[in-house]
Every structure is written in C-alpha cells, then in structure tokens.
Amino acid sequence: MLQLRTILNVADNTGAKKAQMIGIPAKGNRHYAYVGDVITVTIAEASPYSQVKKGEIHQAVITRTRKEKRRKDGSYIRFDDNACVILFEKESKDPKGTRIFGPVAKEVKDGGFNKIASLAEEIY
Image (tube, rainbow, N blue to C red; front, top):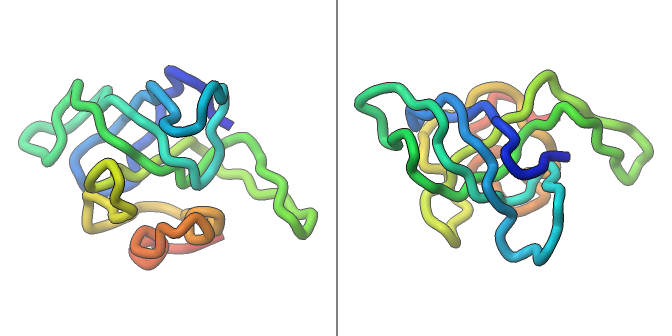
C-alpha cells in the first residue's frame, strides 16, 4: 500500500537506486497502489553513466511492499522494503533492466509480468 511521493528502492540493474511515486495511471482517483500495480515514478537517485538519469519519468511495477497484503487463501505477505522494477515502455510489460534483485511477490506474475518473474531470484 503505497501513496503519492513514496520513495521506493529500484530492484533492477538500470542504474537507478531510488524512485519516487508520482502517480497511478489508468486507475481514476485511487490514492493507494499495491503489489503488482503499474505506477509512474520519477528517478530520485541514480548512479552515473546508467540507462536512466535523475529526474526522468518512467513507468514501474511494484514488486515489494512493507505493508502486508492479504491473499485469497488467508495468508499474508510482507517484505522488508518498498521496491519497484522500471518498465521498458509505457504499455510494455517487459523490464528495462536485465537483472532483478531480491524477492518478488507472486502477485506480479499473476498480473502478467512473466518476464520479471522469470528474472527474479525468488518468488514469494
């Protein structure tokens, strides 16, 4: 459960380190985004000579949240940080990076992001 201006870790190798959530596209007036949702982010911190630069605006998918999420079977899933993966293009479901760091929630794969799930170290 993330809201506007939340700072997220970037869990891929695009060179971005931190991203700030600035919007939830195509969801009307929703205030919160959850695991597996596509959000609009601006790059808050990036390493030099990387694919993305500080201040650029990209689409990203949320892969981990600190706030627990209840699943249909009654279990809960919670992570140590808030993280996202930068997407290649606006309408694409492919990641911009070639590696994904850290665990990824199962809801990401259920949302149709199969490439992200296959690149992830582990899926919870």
